[in-house]
Length: 414
Image (cartoon, rainbow, N blue to C red; front, side, top):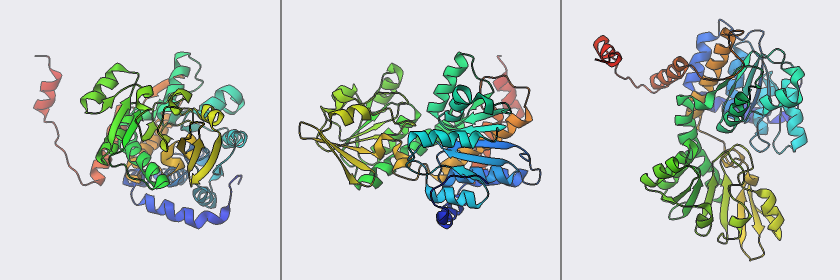
């Protein structure tokens, strides 16, 4: 078995982490139990590029237990947990990742995860899709289709879909209700602030927290920051989202204005250059900057490095940049996604739904191989509803059911 990890001796620590989250992911466990005897993934090669922590490890394990040959790479250099990589290798899964890899190694690991010419792609950020379309088209000849986990990856795939260059069908997991309504909002809201508080050991009470972007991730961050007693400021480019933020009771203003008064800045837009040189020079001494987006492009680290006269590690995960005006700008997790670079990512109960969607959609791809067009699809509604129903059942919650008369009434124009 091939692999490239940092330290196999960390496997027991990794196993403990995986066993812990497994107990809090009942939906994914129920799918495994339902299909384990049928072995629907037997003979299927799966390539995954995900944030390598305990919850994603459990998804890889379930896929292996359902018969798949699984190869995994990371989807961000600072989100990989070496203990988890060691545990997965010990369980017979090929892993190509370790924390802190450089760009060259990161890209090599993506190719190694694809080198068995997969049938199914599980992507996070569309890096596997990019590799298969741009650099290594020879590795995509067996691909039936795949799934994309996150907002940034779906943005990339939508661009490919518009240009009609997708060479296999992909499903936008991020756009499913059981993903963005829960993972993006509640998951990102909690885990991003966990990352801030763990790495700084500071409170949010009374601080001005600037949230860039009021999509589902931004909504969650703003809501949780408000719950911690912060005064939340939202920056936006979309008039409708800005209006929504204002009606939620948040201050709304341009980043150039917010830069002068903010204490903590959290970007969550999926775009580039949200905080740049023109903002750094306006900020208070000891302002804290972090990013909740997938790629490290929202805070312009190139510009910050260029204008800084000194750079120092102040705490684990905190880098201080000294400016000419005497102020220090503190950046968390090198400007990479703070919830995984500085914390353990989303809660297990939240990722349970997202990864259940991944697994059921992968099975859907197999069931419909050869019938799907090479384009980006939404997750079938029946899969979304099945995950919601399973989650409610695991929580001991029952809901009402429409009667035949109620259904008839709703379907009638009269």
